[in-house]
View 1 (cartoon, rainbow, N blue to C red):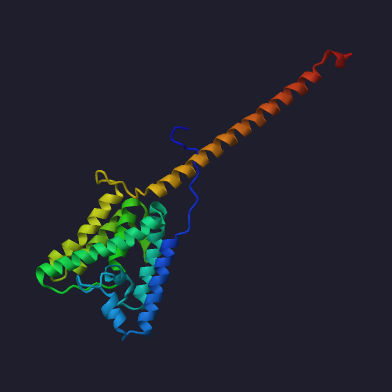
View 2: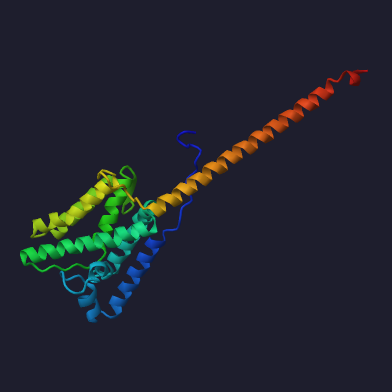
Amino acid sequence: MGDRAWKTAPRKRPPTTTFVLVVVSSVCFLLSWLFFQSPIWGEYLTFNGLNARVWSLVTYPFVFGGGFIGLLFSMFWLWFVGAAVEARMGRGGFLGLYLGSAATFAVLAGLFASATGRPSSLAGPYLPLAAVTVVWGALNPEEVIRIYCIIPIKGKWMAAITAGMVLFGYGLGMPLFGLVMVLPLAFLWLYAKNSIPGLAFAANPFVARKVKQRENRQFHNFIDDVRSREKEREERERLRKLFESSLDDPDDKR
């Protein structure tokens, strides 16, 4: 039992953070569709460089520039990979990954714009979704999925393709900008692989403590169950011997 092979699969918690992100993104898409001409979407929520609207660092993922099909595929993929990553990181950790990666991309885009004089504008969930995809691919490198239910691809290659899409998509005409935007993805890959010294993946003390407590409860329940079964077996064996000895009683043979 040294490796705790007794341990059953942990009870899955509902992907609450993933669900909230999908719902909020969908509601924002509906509002932007209804009020497309409103300056809220174009000016206040979209990231347009490092300015006084600091909230745009984390609000631009909820501004959609594409159509309904793009939203549908994006939210489906967020639900798929987000639920898996949230199960490993916890609700707060996954929210930190999604919004933290969004803010990191925005800061890098803003710094690049300030250094080169080129305008920067970010909108849509694609960058934080790319971050979640890379983490998922690092955690599940050999898991095979089927793109469009046809093309099989492993998780590690899905992460690589996602990084390539960011590189060539955001680096179109500005290769250096594409390289800059890939840097957070490279960091997240190493982070999820526990390849960064002193930085453990999802090292949330509260989550780790709950996991440890759950494992201890499972272990104690397992031990109690083994002891109970052992006592039942011993009692059955005692009764069997008692019954057999009664059949061999000399007084019964007279």
